Image 1 (cartoon, rainbow, N blue to C red):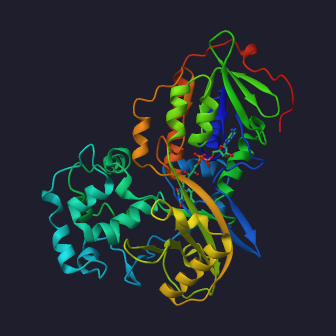
Image 2: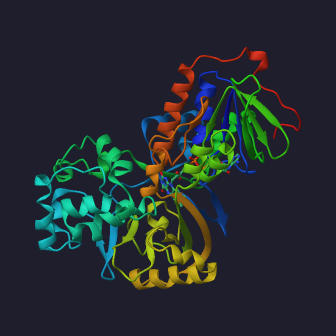
Image 3: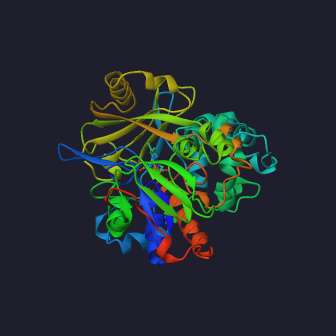
Length: 440
Ligand SMILES: Cc1cc2nc3c(=O)[nH]c(=O)nc-3n(C[C@H](O)[C@H](O)[C@H](O)COP(=O)(O)OP(=O)(O)OC[C@H]3O[C@@H](n4cnc5c(N)ncnc54)[C@H](O)[C@@H]3O)c2cc1C
């Protein structure tokens, strides 16, 4: 019996994959709702996504979408939609092709000439941050106006505080980039039409975890926060205690919860690992939904260049990207502006509205402000190097492997394969013991 703690997309995917392999398991989720940070709501008929706005469809995700019967619900984001960066108060198109790079008005001629030196610069070093690395290779202008905002936007983070070895290195490795990023760019590797399609769902991104949950609902206990992990008396398996006073006896435990929750759960049995996990930094983001006129803007949205006085970090145009009339989603805060989260919702909504008007000329009204957290992948990730966990405890979470949904699916697949390859510890009859309570 495997115990999975957390029923966000990682826990649910792992559960679905263990189910396919016939491996007995139980999923314990604190909330009354599955899906974790993937949350969609409906307001006056409009679909609002409070966490991720879209995902790329990798082959494994595509297979799972078919399995849960969600194909008909897919909303494809056109790969031809332009993406913009707001520099000096103007929206400028992000280049994704060699021709686009040479002709873009986002970077000056001097900046482009500097960037062309990239192939003769050396590769990344161990102590280099993404900010230092990109500035050294392409020059400061390309970093501040293009690569910094786009890369940092993925994490709401500050690339100047993220080591290459923890973040960008694995992306480059996946893309087969050993030395020159520009060389890959000119060969068409950044062409969005060639990348897996970006999608959402008619009822929003939460349709995905909801459908996964339907498949494995008999395994999932909602409203069941885990409070403690203790070694079983025989020293082989684990006892998982929950807030409701239940105890589950399992062979192995997979933690998919945020780092600070994992730290709490490991405090007794693995105090050193717990201390390290507890120090991983998360970025706080404000997600503001704006309602405005439909059909005026054509594109995916924009990020804001560094050095701007605009506090909004980026905006997704759900109106044109996902066909959600009049909906725009603004992101504020993050590592470069943590103080913003000290403001109240009214003030944050007003900043988003005012700045959107300044950049696009469109009048909108704030519909809603959500406060979210996302692992920062900054220098504090050094604490994960050499992290030792007790036997039978595994981390499978967006702070120890890629943060995006495709990365979560890949990691859950790897975890399922690893679990399947491990020997069974106990005879079946002893695998689960519930001491009180009832399944949700
Ligand atoms: C604002 C935002 C925007 C994003 N945008 C994108 C995007 O556009 N595209 C993309 O691909 N990715 C995006 N991501 C990243 C991606 O959505 C997440 O990394 C991913 O959904 C995390 O899933 P998870 O299951 O690993 O973790 P979580 O979703 O955090 O799930 C963990 C679960 O554990 C539960 N839990 C916590 N404590 C306990 C406990 N003690 N006992 C039991 N259960 C517990 C929680 O309730 C939660 O359900 C975004 C993330 C955020 C926050």
